[in-house]
Image (cartoon, rainbow, N blue to C red; front, side):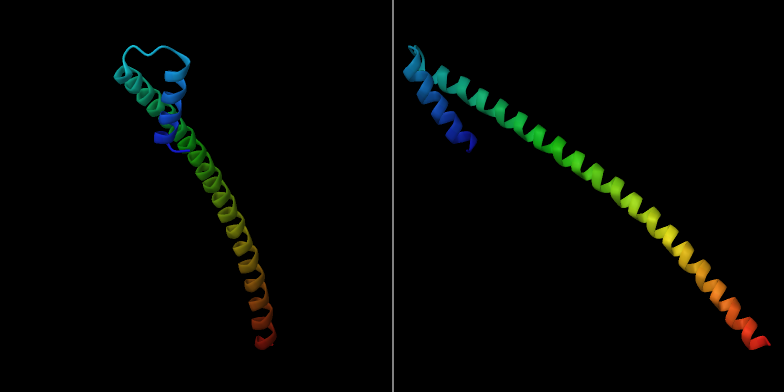
Length: 91
């Protein structure tokens, strides 16, 4: 639901529920409330996105560390095999 739709529905419901002395004042109050709700939803969404981004960065750090360790193991095995081959050809 868009903010405008929310504002219209709220304004209609309030105008039917209570006696409205100043329709412009009611409209301004509804717009303020709608903007407040919209801003809160935006902030909540931003916080959730930031949290997901932080989790993703943490996982990327973990994966990077795992990759480095795997590369070290691969390099050690490669060096060992190279030494064996060199020893074989030197004999």
